[in-house]
Length: 207
Image (tube, rainbow, N blue to C red; front, side, top):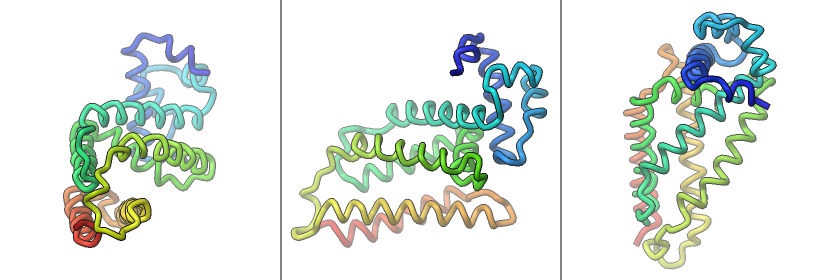
């Protein structure tokens, strides 16, 4: 579907993608302007739509592109030999902080895209998020040392409680950030708070 774009020279692809990432990250799907994207990228709107057909397809392509970059970096950083679930969760939090600092525009775009309320893209982004979670969950948590859990604890349910709580916590913090004057999240503070939840879970479920 995007073969014409993918056949471009890498420098031109990157220029178009970076222009789109910045525009979508700053304004979300509804308020973003393809006029601004083509202006920054140095191409015509006709050429942009020749590559992507419309703004929605461009937005979803950019989302998939950013996810691919993040997952590639993620698996480079995550220690597959770490068998403690809480150690693994702290690795993930550490990676997110690193991603925030090294790939700020990509991180901001993904954060906003996942929380985008536009009916035109919301369901498709949610479906992508669901598939991403399902496909990577087993890879990340397939070698967890279950012997660390207290006797009598249903480990599968305990892990579900942990993941659901942290997912809900993340969603709540994103909403707070949207409603704040700064319109952005204090990630250092959020990850410190997440650490508090991890300590509670560890005391509750571990021997």
